[in-house]
Amino acid sequence: MATAAAHQTARAQADGTAGAGAPLEESARATAYEAAFDAAVAADERIEPRDWMPDAYRSTLVRQIAQHAHSEIIGMQPEANWITRAPSLRRKAILMAKVQDEAGHGLYLYSAAETLGTGRDELLDKLHSGRQKYSSIFNYPTLTWADVGAIGWLVDGAAITNQVPLCRCSYGPYARAMVRVCKEESFHQRQGYELLLALSRGTAEQHAMAQDAVDRWWWPSLMMFGPPDDESAHSAQSMAWKIKRHSNDELRQRFVDICVPQAQSLGLTLPDPEPRWNEEREHHDFGPIDWTEFREVLKGNGPCNEQRITQRKRAHDEGAWVRDAAAAYAGKHTTAGKA
Ligand code: BYC
Image (cartoon, rainbow, N blue to C red):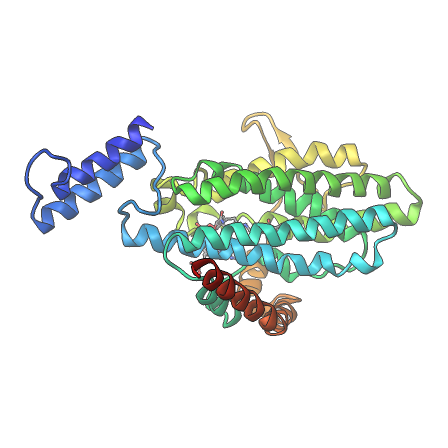
């Protein structure tokens, strides 16, 4: 709290509202604001919506938070595909709750983006017109029930590895949204692990179905962490601003190290002949990632890109009456409240 006050005091002094002298002239004030921002980041303070921030910091956050929000709501599609075919009432209830959680995560994140002055309509428009991305992982199909388990174990597992450090992101609303998202994601990861364990210990066909799902989801899950560090356009600046706390490759390695023993406990193998412990590095080595496939998926040429966006736009259009009704209700409520 004391350090946050220091940030605000520096700005108040520049504005001449701190009772300690006249306001600075404009260019000196801009420099003082920037210095206050840099000092706040260096001191691990949170930047809040009303604080001054560089335009590029704001636009980087909008880009990342929007992409994250879009991923949450597009990510509902591959799993929702199995709700009607879940093998038991228990599994159906769990899956429905999980898919609803993802919608909630989208809401927290769109709200965080709104605190930066960017409206939800604008962001959805950019998603629908292909001007903003969502995670590459959701352009792969869910072919069998075991894919629901593989998504929980690997995709949610990768998401947690990436998102736990985001709880310490320098931008307050994003960091706070991540705390709740991560708590829910850890349930998601466990349900996937438990689902795969049941299949792995089941009949030979069930075991084969679990193995096939892991074979298909392993490499795309490693791609979720983004391009290798030497090709990552934004990492250096985002880490300097403490939006990202670790590089893409660091988090990818952390994830591999977590998954290798978990795969052994599951009785499943990873589709990589190389994940073996490297004494010197104290990490698991793993085989090369097909970055050509990653780039193709980002360009829109993944197996499900077109289907995902078509479905999203249809859901948005079909939901127009709900948004209109909610706005009309809110309008009436406000008018009634004033009367
Ligand atoms: N897919 O410079 P880089 C979930 C883009 S939701 C697509 O390293 P950055 C879940 C990147 O945007 C999981 N695009 O970027 C939901 C950039 O392009 P632009 C979503 C990718 O931002 C439902 C370019 O490549 N999680 O878990 O420093 C059900 C260069 O990359 C990807 C998040 O969004 C990708 N995989 O680092 C179940 C986490 N990777 O924007 C589960 C928050 C990179 O210049 N985001 N690109 O056109 C982040 O942590 C970072 O944005 C990333 C990328 C690590 C993903």
